[in-house]
Length: 109
Image (cartoon, helix red, strand yellow):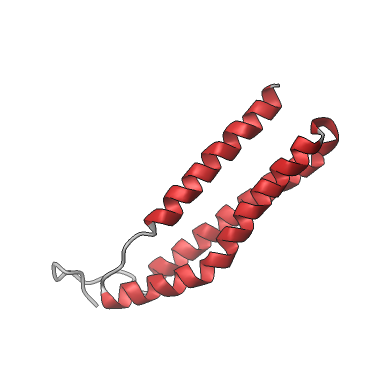
């Protein structure tokens, strides 16, 4: 398999695998932060539980879409027409920014 400029692909099947592993680490990170929010719930009150639920919701959404995204990336590599999941990256960035700002606000307050 070759790039459009004729150079051979270094790892035609491994890029989707690495991307899938990165999304799995992202899910794990969200689950860790959700657990921390639940552990801090006695001090934070209902806001801690709501924060944990928000992080858990994002983690579940990512986990549910990982398989579909992986198969899409594999097909893209084999057809040499792979594009980054722009919507997923923008949505995850927005969710991470909003939830991080919220968590910082909780910790500072």
